Image 1 (tube, rainbow over the protein chains, first blue to last red):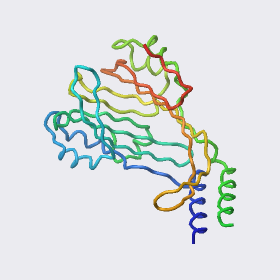
Image 2 (cartoon, helix red, strand yellow; image 1 turned 180 degrees about the horizontal axis):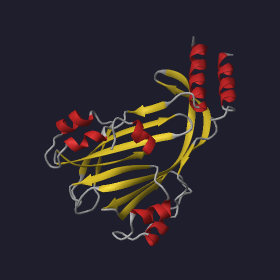
Image 3 (cartoon, rainbow over the protein chains, first blue to last red; image 1 turned 90 degrees about the vertical axis):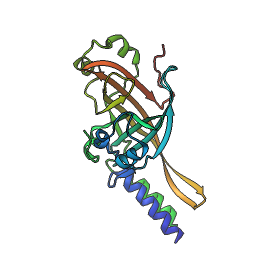
Image 4 (cartoon, chains in turn cyan, green; image 1 turned 90 degrees about the horizontal axis):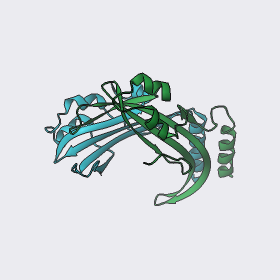
Length: 117
Length: 134
């Protein structure tokens, strides 16, 4: 049983490397839904409703005179063994309200994503 | 014995076409100083950026309340799987065979505002990469 499991794991890894399957991490961020969010007005509940649960959280202070902002991070990576597609969305929150966003990604990821601009 | 079969399978698979080091790249862009010297903020156009760096292989958007409008983002990536190796890892779930992937990755984001160059952000996970620090 243990040997069979090892063989299966090795076969799957080899298959991924050979390009016969796609390895994915995360869910494509729904950047098409950012338009529903209003700077200074939308709440964390609104963000959850529009974008779902983030994969991670963080904080940024871009310049000394700007207050720190909370960041919610959404990311998606996929690879077929030949190419990697990355897409990252960061949502900024200031005093518990939506304050903006920052997203970028490869064109293929955008095409394959769930409705990017 | 089964484990040996597994590694043989990996080795065979790695000799197949398409299993070489995976690479996605718009080319190296280590010389960030040339971006600063050849592109002028608020003056250089999107075409100037394209002439210097080529076509981006992605895009995005930056919007922040303190900015005077959204920034268009052009995404350049230089990603390469430069090392693969089988490793055996122990975990709370037991032992598992894992393929280690060494990934060299550079990302350059160029910001445009109103069709003009507005700045850039560059990062690399390679210790050999050298950015230009003012």
